[in-house]
Image 1 (cartoon, helix red, strand yellow):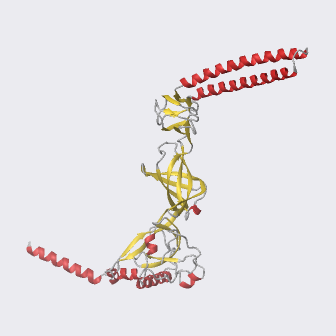
Image 2 (cartoon, helix red, strand yellow):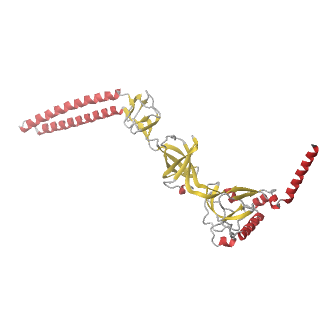
Image 3 (cartoon, one colour):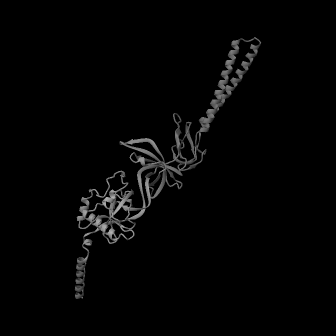
Length: 424
């Protein structure tokens, strides 16, 4: 048994020595961090926060003072336009109506008396039995009585209207989202109508009032698609549309921002007033596009790796020019002669060797970027780093600020933020 163990140990040692002795020196020295080229959808967005509100809210008040005698609705109750939702104690208002009726009858009797007096004086005046001054005085008294009667009629109409105001009705159909009074509470309608209820006209249609920084508001357009989330449903994404960009700026801590109104369909009525929404305005979008992780675009290879990749690309181009999808060489002269591919990345060929792929970057969501390339295809492997004893990483890090010798000097397509990260 001991001899068998010694034999097996010897075989393991011999095998390991043979593997280390005969493997490719380049394979022993090189190890890459990589990502895979994928096809997917990418969106560039602008982020903001806002508050969900009903599209239309109505404050229900009262035009008369008195004590709340009855409340017929509560929070969250649906109401119809014209529905009675509260009543104010009508006793004092009913008394006012009675007083106005008495005043009207008195004014009516006085008017009839003045009318008879004017008729009598007119008859005497026609027979020269009354003076002109008597006729004028009687006519004046009749006009005053007529005015008093009309004023008494107006007072009665006002008193009856106030009595009707004691019955509070819903001005619109909707839902009660706030109730500010209780039975027995006295309300005073003096300078302004006190608020009794707040009604949301329709919670099926809501809006978000989002605060957008002045540096981003230029890319927000009316009708633009919006996606947002709320803390109550963290795994669900809701959709909206920009309805209005309000021109009134807001200044806070020397930061200028604007309010953007976003229309939201809440037909499921899962969104509630007051919820905080995290909003993404979709500025650009690409569907079924070739994408590469931004780490590959930020990677700066060492000079030795770059030279090796370029040499491998030239060899592959000359040796495989007859094959379909063979890598094509894009040298400095062709790039400077107007090629659209203004950046490059390192990818690994089928043989595992590094090669150079010219690319043109598109939109980015901060994580991945769309690219166009005559070489890259879905499923290919792109280098994002190098780890072989630390030397290559140090070289890569030290050269991260070195300008790509193949990158054009044209800065006309530069974009703010994470819009279009380039390769080296």
